[in-house]
Length: 113
Image (cartoon, rainbow, N blue to C red; front, side):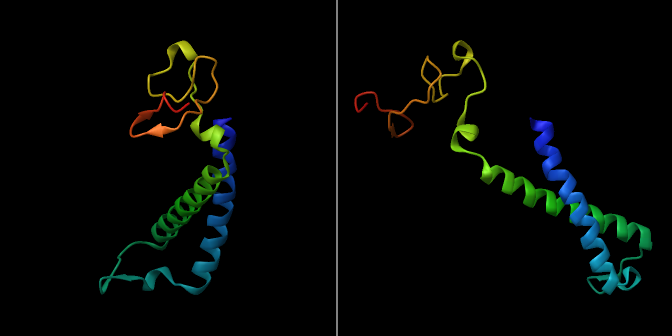
């Protein structure tokens, strides 16, 4: 499932990075780029490559955030280990259900359940 989600993020981000690269460099000449008043001194291919990976990284972050926000609370909060191996702070009871008691401070309120 993780590999599938990574591909849901990486492949559309790759395609959008390619489109962004074409659009940006249709209007911008890489040899005329300056940083702090100085010419970059890089080859065109180096600038194209760096820009592509920057665009790809930014669109992957956007896609990852969208994927995270589309997850249900159960998917985000589930404890992935069996009940007998769960840490003490895992908000699950022995049956594997979510502990519905309210949180008081840093622990669950047993007396209010």
